[in-house]
Length: 507
Image (cartoon, rainbow, N blue to C red):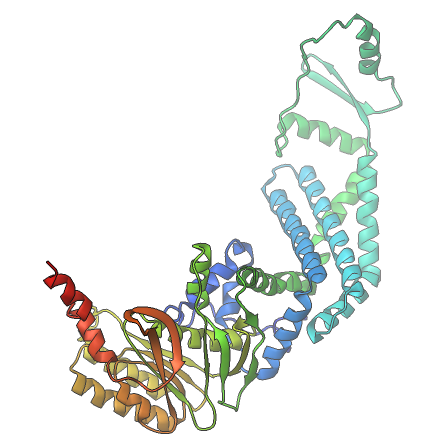
């Protein structure tokens, strides 16, 4: 089994599709942004596959912290560029028609590979590494480049390259025939002619030199010439053919796996750099599989924040914590006040932590869930012939059936299609079930009554500017529900707030 820098115990089965909650939490946008312009590596399955132990997360944290050192990051990027060149050479070789031309492209690919691996080994030996994963790979690489197989293959590649570069031949073109012979130190008549006529040159003259088109593919005439040259230097070309026939033995699986997996870290660090340039914090969270006392200082929705950064708009950060028996955030407040964004932030933080990534925030202590469930409002569809309320009930029932003590639930404004009385009755029943399961949960709602159901619930409120309640601050703070959120929402929906009424009666 090849050494892995993503999975401590070797590569594991990767999910090929995103988790069902990705869209609700905007994680699809986050992963798209991280993996953009890296399609050749197919990185998304790594982001679809959560880890299940704290140690496996710490394993990735250690490696990420090593790679984030600028000298290490720069060298790994250079190595990736070299390996990309190797793949480009091999891909070009596959497209070529003439076998001898294929072989030269393959030889160049192998030469780039050997040089890149040797340089990487030297750079990693000089680096101050601390992580288990990179130390293990460094040791492997050192042994690999010192092995008889590596040194013999590398020296043979150099010998063949030097031999090909020293080949010289002459062509005598007579009409439609071409005679090929070894170069035997014949005089360069072109140079003699230029020297002879140099003294007749007066002022600027027209250049009649013609350049050959620089096509990658050889034409049949060039291929014919090369075949004759190959017969003249049969030993060199025969050795080249034998060498290329064993090409699959040269690129070691562990090196190939490393180059692929390291893109996960490089992509994450390049993504995080965009936020740090905007002075937005990312941190390595402390993750626990048994303690549900969590906190985050100055967290934010990464998907939304990136859009705001690109538009040069400010990003509002929020903090939260749960202690003791507290398990559930009940978030109330006016529409468009940042409640849903806060809920998405909560979900994003826990999922990013579960795949071993740094998370948005200055400091974070988070829980490692076995599953994350989301319940966001969805449009009615004719395909299931269910009304909105029925659909809400069926989906939340499925969540509660699957949830365990280690699950996290994110609910956003459920039961908006029914009356307040019925919505409150149903929501209390669901919350009681969540409380009995001891789940970590965040519930965005207009019903402030849910925030005081038990000692496990914590009230969070999206704030407004005190002097002008119609202006949102997008800050969500730990404070009792004010009881007016639902009424204000209804008033805004039907445009009967004070501001709306004043506009109507204004002269």
